[in-house]
Length: 78
Image (cartoon, rainbow, N blue to C red; front, side, top):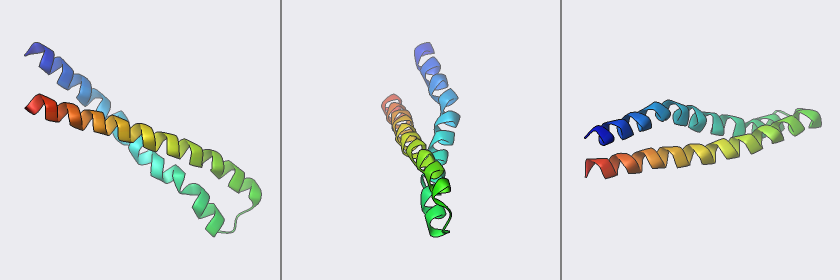
């Protein structure tokens, strides 16, 4: 039981980071589209392209973290 408790505590300690990463992804991913629709300069669009790449990466990392946490919780409940 001690091992299960330590594993659960480890998963719970990373959930805040996972949720923060998951929330940051779509915000930075949409920055390029917002800048383009607002008619901002090409220089701004270059900056938002870097944010777009970071947003795609963080969205992928967030999905993996959340899926791991959910799958481990389902495994431990069975």
